[in-house]
Image 1 (spheres, rainbow over the protein chains, first blue to last red):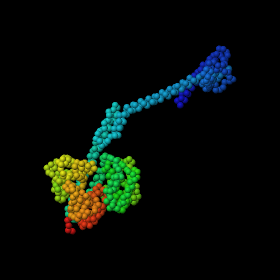
Image 2: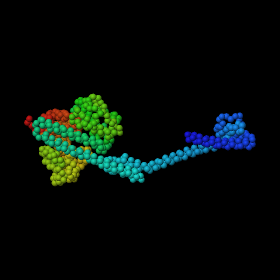
Image 3: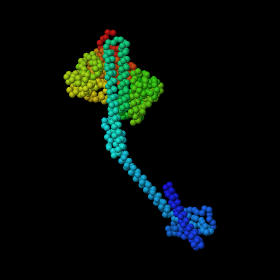
Image 4: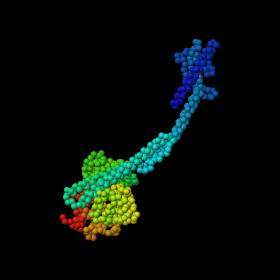
Length: 399
Length: 229
């Protein structure tokens, strides 16, 4: 639309100039003729019209649009006219020249349509060409991206990139390959390191434990000595459990539990509740379960066990004698709540490692940290809420 | 029983041998893969206790070797590796049991006894401990031919103590045997105390609760021998 307007304005100006030019010539002719013949011609010739007027107005020339009936085509056709008031000698005259706009209008239309069509075709071809070139150039890049995205750190294969016509992408591929190789090497080194720590620490601990056990078999009747031995033993167990807990955390962090399958969490909970039965009965804890729906989660079965056991352990050890544990499953949320003493620490630090538990001296302080780690790596959102006497852990399974 | 203990950590090896010898077993040791292989080839044993990480080879290879010889002996793996996959691998290769380090000697002993019974007395036999007759395949006991009703945990407790007669067993060891990894929840091991109490009550009906002796401050001892206090 705007384009049309601009163009029209240009053509209008051109027509006006043309008319002015013609007026200039006509005036010259009229004056010449007057000089030659001594009289002024009044009338219409061709498209020029000369009429006598009474005076010359201040604004002595102007343009206007008009329509004139064409007898042949029996149509009103558009014209542009220029009016010029002047004096030939002393006679005020008005000279009018008409110019047909048909031609120019058609011209404008054709040009506009043509140009627009050309632009559209131009744009479309650019677009098509662009996409084609795009695919050609960036195809290799997206292939590389795809390979990286689907790369599995646990496999021992190095990714294979297809050679590209483009030097920069070949360079990119080379760098990526090198980087991935390094990551794989580091990862395997880490896995090995984790396994080594386990062995290294477990053996001295096993030795200490066994020696203490042997010591107990000898005839020690001294109560103080017996107590000392028992304390050493307890310390050893605690050390051992902390060691195992830390190793577990590292393993989970490094995704070393890979055999993930869909686990029916309800079944896992029920299984462990049975196992804990004697413990809960001794402490006279009442267990209430409302498993309203089924939750399935994709994870390693070992991790599912560890998750549930740690949550239940927590609910039991932080509980009062004669207390309650309520296990609730509604849609995708599992909540485990227990009665108990007020929290000794800030709820925000509940999931930190070694968050102190004053009620269970044997606690490693890692139970909830392990639970949180498992949740974090399996898209489970865990949160705590509670009062001084009632604690609730909620797990939202988003897959 | 004649037992071969294969373990590269000397101190641990000695502890095991000392404990088991006191039980009356004849124990031989092997500290390296090659020594173990030699002994396996040359002699025969009733039971093998094998560590997986050995200098010069793995315990797995020793086990495969044993199985190839169509040996009927019992095999217990002791290992620091404790994932489910490791356990499954060990049992699939042919081991009868799998203990992770660090383990309690009393636990090892109990497993050994259980293994021995499995291999040698496959029928529904019972073995006698004082006046108590234990039916391991049926998880029950009889005293003077009368069946005594025990909960599963009480039964396991009794069996464990009876397998380690005249040994001081700490509360920790008992708790670990009964609840394994869940031990943290057993706050101050009051649970063990409660179970012992209940077990004693049931045994007292037949006047045998005295078998379970209190070792004050530390744990318990099971003994059918009359002690002079």
